[in-house]
Image (cartoon, rainbow, N blue to C red):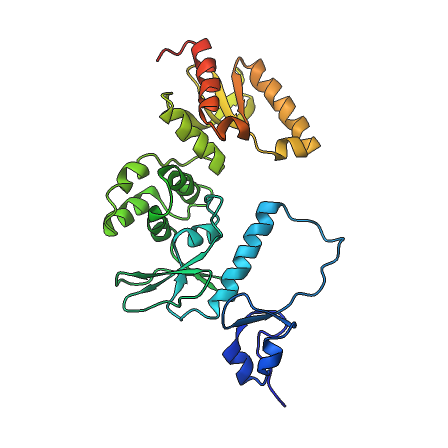
Length: 310
């Protein structure tokens, strides 16, 4: 009896494996299989019920990227790994809009990673590998991936990604590890970037907002401010704010408007913050894009009214 590839029907496999297990070239090139990369096949998915819950667009995009990385993994050498911005994506870090244009993979010299369409290959200086395995995908260690990505990302994007990686509730790496890796990889310009990384931001947009405010000439806000009443009753956790001036600043994504229950909770929270004498500046996406000066001006006016002087 002809053996079937172990991945048949679910997982990706190489054309060579398919041929070895008795699947003909015509079948491999036919409509039964997807061909995500040269030399890779995967059985096409069966019809998904229309009753299945629809994933948010960003989640669906991430799942599609993870699938492509898993498909590519069967063609990668045993010592190759996903790296640079692609590794940051797999670790969950926020990245720019075009993050899934190609998959970055690396090998350590003298290794030459595969070079095929949809892949950007890198040869790294000889050193001990530090990748981790996520599912079937080998992924570069967070600190190394962040430093590698500095050749592709702006300073703001790097700070956004680093805030995510060092956040206490996930602690994928530390500021000290980022700093040491930047020295090891001879990227001196990153020391100034690392100086601006903070533990406490809950989202990429919160980090971007903080950076835009400081670059716009405002004081750096405190992060994760906890607000209590005079008798010690907890009122709210504030994303960022200026305790001296009783000004809170928060970025609000679309989930606040799309979820009626969430909006009601938020409205009660906003009222409670105001009752404690704080002014809450709510920043929406159109305040940051395309012109972040709009957000800076909103916060500046609130600070000036509260007594701040430049």
